[in-house]
Image 1 (cartoon, helix red, strand yellow):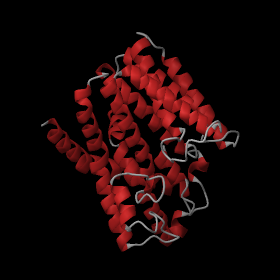
Image 2: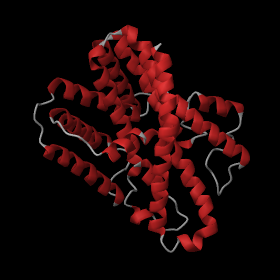
Image 3: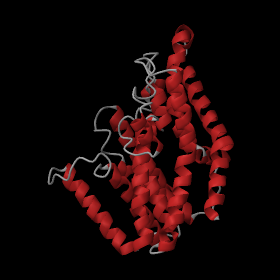
Image 4: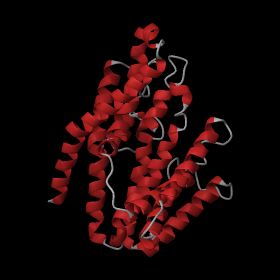
Length: 325
């Protein structure tokens, strides 16, 4: 969704991809955060208070996030060194090669500004949530729930003007609440998941998400405030349906899901490189902008899958073997 959003934003043709139908694709970030909260609690639901597993949990999360990210970061730094950012080729901030900026990028600290890999700002939120969720293993579910409620209360107070708790760009952003919505979905599925779920509930949730996206595209709503609850409903109904039914899914979709992190990491740089390259072929590409951008999207998907197979999976397998020892 995010990749298609950035493809849509390529304005060299002065014609949005497919008329801008993927203009809501930025909400893929909201979906990602709700889904992350869901997966964390769903997978570790029975491990509340298992303090001994905290280190393994954090190590596995680090192995999932950092190795392939560091590879993309290294390539980005090399490209920035060879082709410094300009107004026409802004794939990274101008201060990307400064030691402090690089250090922050390596550890994914405060990537809300001056991120060398621009889309890495979301990973700063993800790491904050991983660290916080480790308290579920350390302290158990009761204390974890109280801390979640306290944190949500602080976010609500901050953004409703009821209190001034500082201006930390990550800890008090409403986006953090989307992780907790995902945890709530996992709790409901684990505790109350019915044995039979009609697919119509899933279709209804998809329809709600589509209605919100349509409302954004026509300018009826603020696009950054309305997606959390629809995606919560979609994940809740989808997970309940999946849990209550025995079915297989198309291999291609599973492959794209497995490769989605690699696709996410590499897509932005590829879009920027395309935007620069197309300057030399504007006359040809402008004759078929939708076809050109569709080929760009397919090329990004193919590159992401190849990087997943050739780089991400071997790195992850190696890291897991070392952690297992």
